[in-house]
Length: 406
Length: 85
Image (cartoon, rainbow over all chains, first blue to last red; front, side, top):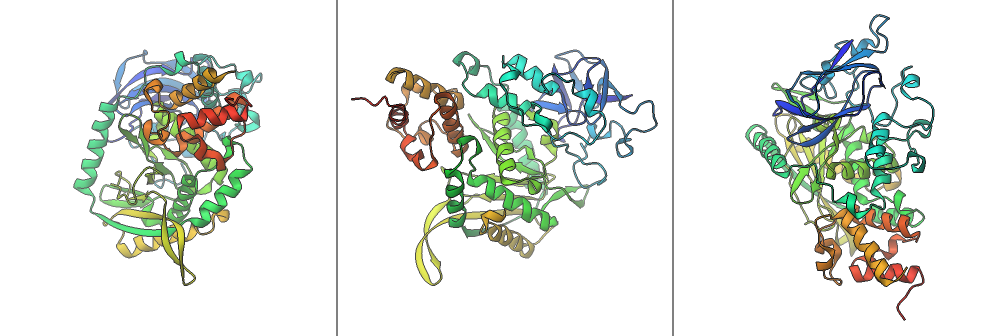
């Protein structure tokens, strides 16, 4: 039996309000399932369980505000009868209590279960009762948004319908009444959270800044060729290429991918890229796109679309809040040439992409128009120096020369 | 489906992306990216929604034609064979 506790979703969080249960006693859950929604300063966060088992009891009433660490529900773990079900998980509630153990620390604990990937655990069977294969969270969402699961194409394992599938379906042709739902994002609270994180960053992190101009004409050609044959759902944006290139480079340059905590740097083996997402009306969030270096461009793009949509709708998952090992921020086509990001602690680097501009450029000794993007790096001088930073940025630029290999 | 309906569909889909915008007040000839503050992913979502809702193909090369409200409506009408004559 383990307690499912109110997680800490950032150093500044002391309490959270439980606003929705997605499970009830008797339900089977598996690692990575969304079991509850908690309202915090950062908006409504979907909380995932790190356990596989059966919900034994709900301990906290809806709409109660409880301190971090408070048991919210009790889960009878899958291997309860046996000894320890999954040895690596034994510090039972640990992943959900205070520092939500992102990355590196004990490599045995993959901190971020990919939301759609099923754990390699025998519990998958009881967790997914036959009928239409649909996750509990997806079913609940389908009910809430009046989406008939039969009309949803599942992208999960074995065609199972995931939360994201339902969200996508629900967002398609939306009757005007529904889209006027009050946003769950509190922009004032979000501003307070940004202020706290950025002030801390500027107080504690000795930033250094580098910029590098890169010709991305090859990326643009490759994208227009690829997209020409694809329906809009599957088209890629250049943001997917820059994100992937950054993730691959981050994997090769561990001094920019990890956490600086307690006067010590812990590089991360996994690359979870925080994607800076602007919120309409003036807000910013940077939820993690897990294992971005491992995803194909197509998967990366659909994850990005899902992440942006959920973030703007005020639906971020707990593992997406604190897992990021590096952040990418892009101004997009309406931005300006160059931006210098501020590192999100406890990370140690943020990579910025300005607007793609057509510039006179020398190629093979002749001047011609090329599409050029300015990539910047803000990095933590306690961990790395400009020389390493320059190599890191150069690597991102090199990777963008061969988009077909990303 | 006539001109009014297409306008309504296009405005509705843009409103799904920018719910706080009063589409009636948007200059029909203004660049939507600036007029209602949408980025490339928002625009792709708009194209995707129109594609699903009206069943028309909108190749990427045509995006510039849909960058204003009037342009988008005209483009969709032409694709559906509803051009104003």
